[in-house]
Amino acid sequence: CLYQLAVPLHLHTHIHIHRTMSLSGSAPAGVRIVVGYQCMLTVLSLMLPLERLLGLSLAAVCSGKLWTPPLFWAVSRLGTSPGLALVLAVLSSLAALSYLPRLEQDLGTLRFFCWIFLVSTAVGCLYLLICLLACLLVDSTWFYSSSCGLWPLLVAAMTLHHLEELPAPAHSHSHSHSHSH
Image (cartoon, rainbow, N blue to C red):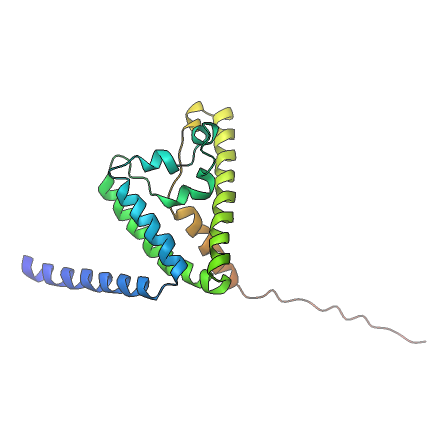
């Protein structure tokens, strides 16, 4: 009975791995670079303190790490459960391979990298502002609250994707009737 359950599970896992490999193979070069770079740094963070180097927080920016707003996406937080964190990093990579290729194809590779830089910087600055307000109004521990990973960029890409799919609003044409006397 256990064997009967294991065979479909293995086949199901094999199909997902094959789909992921075909997804990454068809992704444009810029998306593969972003996802590969993020995966590489996340795995390296198991051995090196990369989250302290790239994680976005008020403490990091105030200590001179001004590169964190545009680069906080480059490593995922591993925290106290590295296994779960790696699963979440894989899920964010799959989401990136689903949503970012269309964006790169629409923008071109160079403008795609500029979009990554600008959106991550804008989201990072917004995050810092929220942390500052929370630090002043709620609790000083927000000074050390850190953000990292692809999810903020993915939310922005998903939002753009779904906004493009909205139907165009129907414009009412007001007809002016001119009367000649």
